[in-house]
Image (cartoon, rainbow, N blue to C red):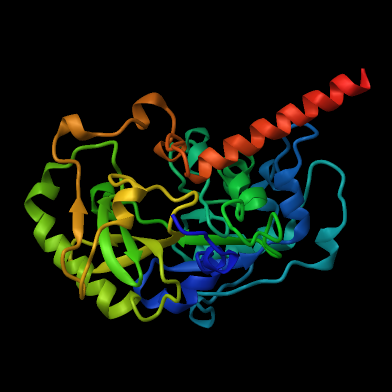
Length: 339
């Protein structure tokens, strides 16, 4: 697999791609996070503390909000005051107010994510067992309990051959409108190589959906057409993946962009297979679904997200585990030397 560049990883940050694909994506509001909140997420030296508002969510001031005056995309700067260390419990009043207003303008419920990742591994801690959030406190709880967000915070560039830093200059909180009726069987991952769509995979590979056997050909045509009309000429990377959702009225919506390889899951393919699929002028796209109950992949039944199970050689998680193991060995050698 070819080397990945930092610029390719950066293009997959939601604050980078969403303004371009806003008209064909899920309505999203984006806020730049103050560094103090980023450090709060990284801090594991003390007790597990949530922001002060968890004790009194109604303490935030109410402001008259007019959604007409607000763009779907906004980047809000954190204040200088928030960069100062505060005594426990932590407090981020300006960010909390902006989040409160955004949640209201998006219908009262959102699912949150950072630049690249959502805290899907901590959904179990919420009252609904999902990423649905109605308050800043719920978002903070999911983020603090999530291990997958460590990827964004510390390891986003680990698979890059030109890695210069361990983290981006700025972090962003994306609040995406919550749709309770979304069906997991209608979400798909699309693989683009040399700017050609070469493969499509069912996104939720831990379940067999009989309806996909009946609609596979129609879905293939819809996704191919969407790629050619909306994505192919607008996303600048040569090789990448993107996730889509197909609505009941056959509209295709972009859910996310990810890199080719690295920490991105190949799902029902292997990366080697995808490297050798040949596609000419949008034809011969290979579309894979779980064909029967025997074809499901492990995940939900083991209480481990499928994303963490791809530790094959060359995967981003494989490299991450290798790096962690080496760091542990170095710490052990240092301890022995000092003894």
